[in-house]
Length: 338
Image (tube, rainbow, N blue to C red; front, top):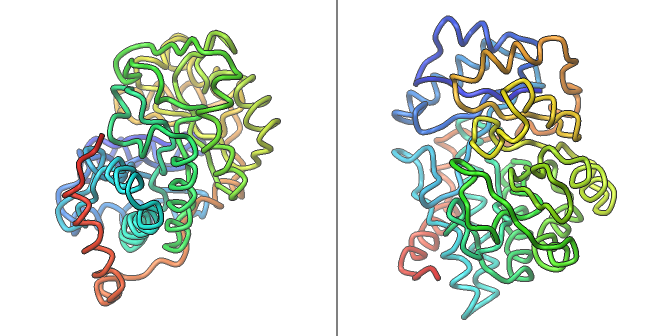
């Protein structure tokens, strides 16, 4: 049930041992794992040779803007807030741009054999330090429309969707990478605003949902990813979500509410998470020790996140539609984000 982080641009002996553990369902790659597209392809080929099963996935955050892990050799993707700015003058164009942005991102990831980019961000643009211009807009209706377009674009490129960060990370100031985050609003307010884009993405068939590390004390005193109320009652119950529930990175400061690494893993699993992200290499051994006696996530369910419709990089570059999309996306850099 673990997606683990790697240290550098090639696998070392210890990482090869870690990756063969039965509770490891995949890896999450970062900028530290990337030097060039050719090096990345070598790393991915090595991973696929080591783990040949369908229940092994490779993930990344290739959102665009400041959260784009692979840059040289890939299309530079503007932050999603630029699309929201277009919406304010031309909603139809913004919907088209969201779909094109998603297709470019996902098709390039699939061409190098990355299965999942954890996207789209469906948090509202309401001032959170970690989210910032990663969010598309402050209006839930707009985020819903653009989010559904983004999911369509990802699917056209052969990638499943993982909207994040449920139930909504945008309305609290703190950055959960560094601090605990507490959102004091009541459930009715969150339902009215933040939940709308997620509800619509689930209804559109999103294959996975990533949880927030935010605490909503009016609902539960535990972070959402460690809360049975948010996962079992709201996401599974009210929204009837049947896909995979993914934790945010348990290395983050806000995940420490449960205690050490073992306590964090158990808290997420007990709450209903299917996959646990242990993104920083210094927590991987502890995560493996804590989960060694636990049954792995159902391989058939994990395999549903594996990518499809992958093309080669050469055939991707040969696609004239891609050139058109790149032109449109580059023009987004002229938009001024709110």
